[in-house]
Length: 326
Image (cartoon, rainbow, N blue to C red; front, side, top):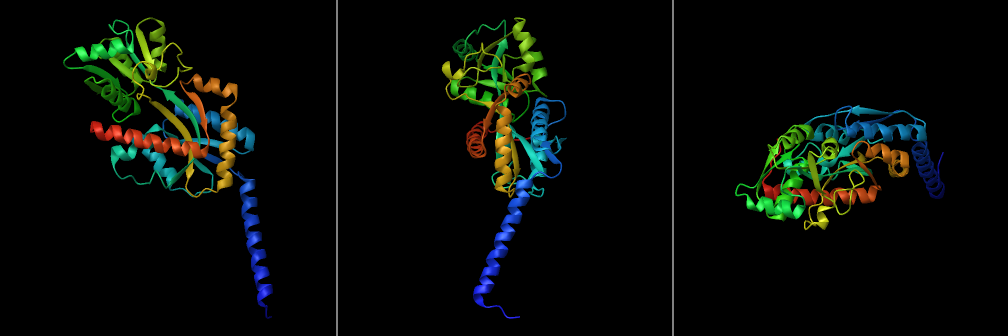
């Protein structure tokens, strides 16, 4: 059977239209099976709980199972690398964390390209960092803290929950901008750092405040400020460092969902809309606050800009301080 050119072009166009319709239909029907949410930390911590809260919301809204898988290790690199290389069909997502924007500067070339292999979906939360001292410290304000630091020939000793962690980088930024010297002592998490702060073995911490709140309320520790431009809902009594002479010392941990590059845009848009809808609910906000996190929903485009800015900012701090990854 012969086909003239006009008939052939018409059939081809119809085929393309049908193909596009089939593809769109498939995306509109997403999800049709279980979606895996990959958490870069272990079970039971704030990151894991936040991932499960959002997963439960999505499950109820979209009618499919959303299960959390914990792939902890290598400072979140294990989870990042895993999701970067899965099939980009929208059925495996990453709940990324702040190290996403610092790992390349700390470690050098990674097994994945953080700028190309994963795409942002929506930011979920931030973890504000607070400057905390022992209640016996002579410093009752940030200005007094800086003056105290400058008066000590050897500077101050700061506790950090890990080498290259955001609190570590925030301390380096604070020392640089305040013009004080100091030593950053690395601990395995916030709790042992606060233990030594209570015991007077270090001068200060600049990290998440959750583990310190009972000691602050008991009058054993003092929060001088929060590394932000506004007060935090987590502890409103701490004024921003930005209002106390350190406008550039703004730092917070963060979490947000990402997908492998190539996941269709309609799926990303749907997830973006649903996640941000969840974060606007008062009950969800409260549940995040209970874990020491503030909900900060950013859409995919703004989340991408945020990651880009964080990467540039902390890469500069890492280079200036000569910090190397483990």
